[in-house]
Image (cartoon, rainbow, N blue to C red; front, side, top):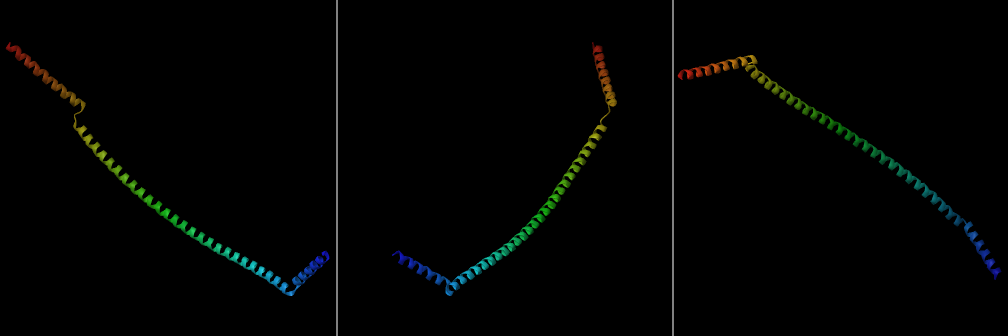
Length: 151
């Protein structure tokens, strides 16, 4: 039986070789190889398309980011100018207030100086005090003298 089995295996192997070598099978193999090459080519084309689209998207995003950054920078500069203007306005108001307060203080100082100038000086006060003391002494002396005379 081994002999029949070997003959059958050989026969089958030979028949398989004939089938594989046949033009129909070679055509199918060629078609598969060609289809594989076409698929590889399409996949490569799709990859290039994806890369190109991604590059386009990245460029669009970069432009959008640049535009947004430019707008943000412009807005920050505008805010800085507004803040500078407001600070200057506040500074002007403070300067005006301080100036007004200084003017008012100077006016009060002038009033105080006028009042002090209207007061008698030390010599005048001393002279008035001496005159008042002399008047009091004289009045007291007169009273004592009148009382003594009555007695």
